[in-house]
Length: 260
Length: 303
Ligand code: SF4
Ligand code: SF4
Image (cartoon, rainbow over the protein chains, first blue to last red):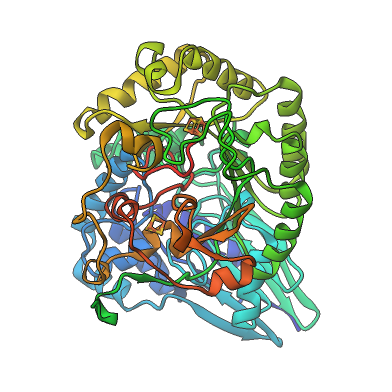
């Protein structure tokens, strides 16, 4: 017996990518769908992702953005410290808060911050940033394996899945495996326009992860972002696959790899 | 008498950052704002040996340390600095705080190789205190601007993206004009996507003589810590190793009460009561010593 899960990272209002990812996941024969949080941000028409999540019974974890929108806080709690990054983050936050309807806000408020699954004798912890902090950035190049082992030890799980950084990665440590599932909301700063989701195949023998690229109608998304008056810098990212904001949180290696 | 509730006691939540004062108080420069008064002749703290550091690195794995930080003085005065960073990159990410005036191409090439073999990042934080010699050199010394810029170019040339840190020796309101001055200067020097971090000064060491120390009122109290996000304070998630032992944070190494133990695990267990003026600066500015660029926290030993 093997169970296949689809794990979606931040959606950031990119309902077109979510639609494409759901279709791709269905074609892969996925048994259950999960979203690891940050349903809003960045893109247009915040209410459009929700019907897709409800209809397909996507089980959602609360990200920092969802906590902020659900509780109508002043900002997104993304954890940026650069003034320019914060300036742009605030534009998308104010837009998303204003345009998310009351029912959807209530839904966001009701979400749990983490979820532990027990499937085929494997224990899997789903969270947004890290098991200890919703908005912690766990980058591949700044997260030692012995640091992750503290979580595997404390939480007695075999696998931890998170998102938040926007760039997927996977590591086996001596006590378990960690997977950052990537995001659907915007491309990975690798000069390609596609986005990513992850599947886990879970059996008694172990957990196998796979990353899947998602191609979607980014021209349409760009047009809609323009219509909604969202910043040109965001549209440029969708069009070129290169980040124009939120760069200051990137560590040396991720930044260097992507030639910034 | 201060009651327990008004004592500003901070307990370590997790040892995220392990610092090494690798070259003690020895520096090739004598900046007039250096908060531990480093100089070519200040030997009050000595050099840590590679073996001592290896021992701490090993110990740190059990404690689940998230990142390693190297400061001085000037770390690259250490004859084995390259090897020490190579050792570190085998187990986790490393950040080195340098004045960039003594860097050699050959070292940087070796370090770039070590980084590409490792899964982890090596970050350089380079201290420059003005975007031209006229503003930088009066603080850091004659000719230091040109030498530091040469160092930055070497780093960029070998593929590193140094974080330029500038101590705020100007008024807070001038931040944005200083920032754009730095940006255009660095771009002109060929660093196309510069990372910059502004830091407030700490009124300790040489800086105390420059601008005056803290008043008695500038202290953190227990009340002030209520509802305050303590993770903003370095002592909530860090410790530093020097030749004297393990201290609460990189800022207070000269205060006897900040020396917690000889051993990392014990020092990690010990809470600390914030009793110094410098704690007041941390409290005000927060997020000190982290790598995220252009944040507004005070520097560690600023190299
Ligand atoms: S100087 Fe800052 S980091 Fe050090 S003990 Fe005081 S508050 Fe903590
Ligand atoms: S501030 Fe840095 S470069 Fe200047 S004397 Fe102190 S340690 Fe040396």
